[in-house]
Amino acid sequence: MIRYLVVLSLMAGCSSTKSPKQVETPVRPSTETKVATWHGLPVMPGLPPTLTTLKFGMDRSLMTGKFAGLLTEKGVVLSPKSTAKAKLSADGTLRYLLVNVNVNEAEFTKKWSNGEPRLIDNRNRAQVWYLPQRSVQIQLKTQPKGVQLTYVPVTPIKRLVGIANDAGNTFASLIGKPISASKQLFIRMEPSTDKRSFLAWASPLVDETVSLKAHLRHDQGTQELFAIDLFLKDDEKGTLKKRLETVVQKNWLPAAAKDTYEKNGVTLRFGHIQRLSRRKRANYPFTLHLTKRP
Image (cartoon, rainbow, N blue to C red; front, side, top):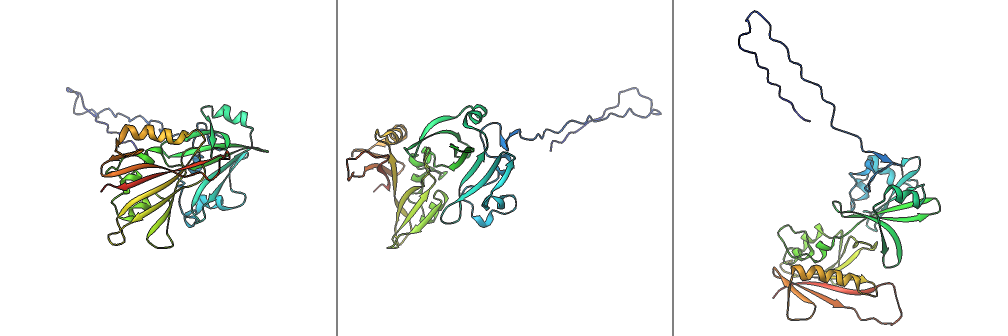
């Protein structure tokens, strides 16, 4: 709330017998305004105004009050033409938010006009919008009765191939830290069968819906993380790898070995997964390795 301080002054020469003139503080209108909506959604791409405090990755046990309806079959009614439902991961945490809007794609994209056509999972074309402040991508899919919006939390490219820093907001920053620190960037972690490493999952990359998989290796004595192996998917042209290499070459220093870079005590290396068949496919896997420099 804005606080106003009104200072009253009496002019020199006024008679002491006269009462000072009262100055009224003007009543200013409230600066708080309601968010303009359209079928329960903001007029610009974003989360439904009634669900802005929803956090992806939150446990279903925390989805109470106004969020409880997201777990029901019918979902939460946002407007006469729209509903919202939660899509949970296997561990019971919020993975996606699904919003169904009973308007056709042409009408919807006319309202949200700044979307981009992208290829999702290297398979399906969709109109998308990206919310950088939330690291969320909205993917549109046409349905028999209108459209469905899938709100997908994503792993930013800077987190994937950014250099190690004090903020700890990149995967490289986890190298040399206790394995427990990895929980801040991975949404799920499970010990491997040999108990000597962890399998981990992070939010999908942009234009994907499948979680980013990783293998975390740590010292059994000190519990220090010394290696992260990330498993990525590309198209036939190697579009993703080329994009990552462009970012890496601007921030990392090239090492002697091919496809290898170094910076701040961490080595980054691109790896190749041998194809078992020459048959054309939607995804071509490759790897990204982050290790502690000797």
